[in-house]
Image (cartoon, rainbow, N blue to C red; front, side, top):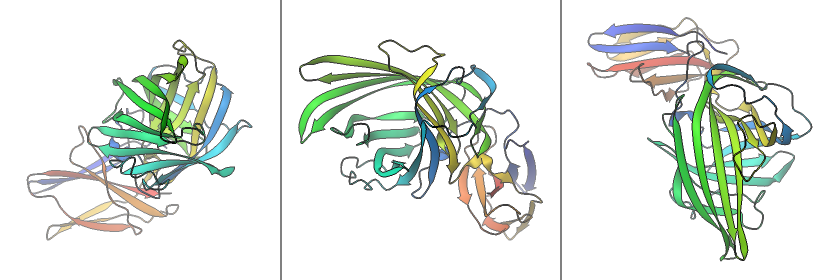
Length: 346
């Protein structure tokens, strides 16, 4: 649900507190590291498809665009659950000592089919250290990147582009069987609203990315596979939808019609832009304490309060998640600005 912005500015001496709700309709979102799920216990579930016809699905560039991916699960799709877990969930913590969390993918039709990716969040973006993927790489599942890669530079916005290079070895029983050289060229080429199954309409950035894998195995000529993928970034979910082309030896066209893999998220633990603004928000100041009260939600289970230092280039931070319709905090020192927004969580 996309809702118009409502801002209330309250001047307190030389301090300033703002109460802000939601995004303006059609706005371009700015994606920050705070928008990735990274706390243990967070999760999302999606329909994962293979060998799917996707003619016309990526759509046009620029924006605002509307992408309707809300169609029902089809026969080629399984349900994949992604959980945020500790880095030693698969026993790999010693391999990725700088990672602070992992994403674990599970095929819900066969819970033994699991894979892990290892990350940390910094002020420059999301850093990717490697993966453990016995599903797609049963012989050499563990990939420890020679140098960690900045997978997503943040803040990320429409028109931004970046590239990266990654190398890793295929190792079996401590014997090197081969190596992979990966290069990526990515651009945020569109923005707008994506409609997800069950979840509904949310603001999104679309990324158009070309990935090249050059794999070398002893005694065999290097093999090159090039993919084009489109994916949609949604706050609180991260990668909420994805369409990956079939592999080719040259760059796949922008309007490819056959996908090797598709993903459409339909459930998430904390989808931020699906949150509804609270009603009847009121404010009181007493002895340096700011108190907020609002009408209790009829369809919400709890609330989410975020804070930012400005509205020009806001970086909203999770501040509190109360279960009641009131909350208080010490206000910022005089001479500073602080803005708050309050949502009802479904």
